[in-house]
Amino acid sequence: MKLAVGFAGMGIMGKAMARNAAKAGHHVAVYNRSPLASGDAEGLEIAATPLELARCRDVLVLMLTGPGAVDAVLWGENGMGPALGPGKTVVNMSTVPPAYCASLAGKLGAAGAVFVDAPVSGSKVPAQQGALVILAGGPRDAVDALEPLFMSMGKKVVYCGEAPKGSMMKMSVNLLLASMMESLCEMLVFGRAGGLTDEAMLQVALGGPLACDLFKVKEQMLLQRKFPAQFPLKHMHKDLRFVTDTATDMRCPAPSAFANLQIFNQAMSKGLGELDFAAVIEALEGMV
Ligand code: NAP
Image (cartoon, rainbow, N blue to C red; front, side, top):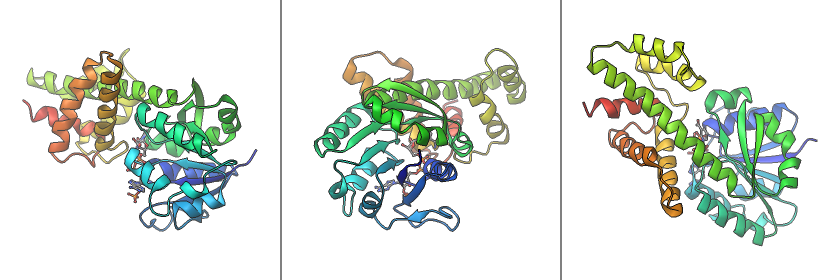
């Protein structure tokens, strides 16, 4: 079934996701706070405000930085708020903390809209290839109804339970992602201090049982020392804050997340936020 979908947030991820949804035949309109570059929304209807977007589409996908941006688009000036009610489904795909997601579910439920909590696993390239993993939370029937849209942007939908379990899944997977990225960089800095080369170490990391898509994607960045943003470091820093806040609220141990937050704090202080999160290696090198 083809859906009438409005995308708010045409950043690295939203742009690719909206295009794939349109390619699959969904009736897509988009909104972005800043003017879009020519070609970014080719063939797509552009709404001037979030409110206009919400008035012209039934399924409203949010792919925004985080809670502040979601609040601005929903409840800010010319926000979607007045248009939200029965017949509208809001699908938050931005990474937000579970506690915030739960309050969003409550507010939208009170307005009579359906809320689906559906962050994603996968970065710029999987988004472009329609190969994301969708971490879906919310009413099962609403998630099932969105399956054709989700499968136009992703290769798999994992149903996690009621909201905010999609966001809880996202916290869990990003805890692992931060740890894997930091550990690969730590291996390079540690081995180098003992006289090994990055080339040799990456051959070992990628040639044996530790090889994985993440390490493959980051290999050239680390060798060439160029970090064009696929997953901006500032977003992983934000996510580690969400993970550690959530762990604190739950009184659950998450020692690597707290340690990694310290390292990403250093990286932010060094002005690396706009680069890919593999640039966290520069923060580690600064500690040698
Ligand atoms: P991005 O490129 O930085 O895009 C962020 C989007 O949010 C832009 O459209 C931006 O609009 C909009 N925005 C920010 N503040 C706003 C505000 N106050 N009002 C209205 N719009 C606002 O980020 P991204 O990489 O696409 O990521 C989007 C979300 O997906 C984030 O939650 C991120 O953590 C998550 N995520 C990212 C990746 C990845 O690899 N990139 C992977 C998985 C999940 P402007 O263009 O006007 O700034």
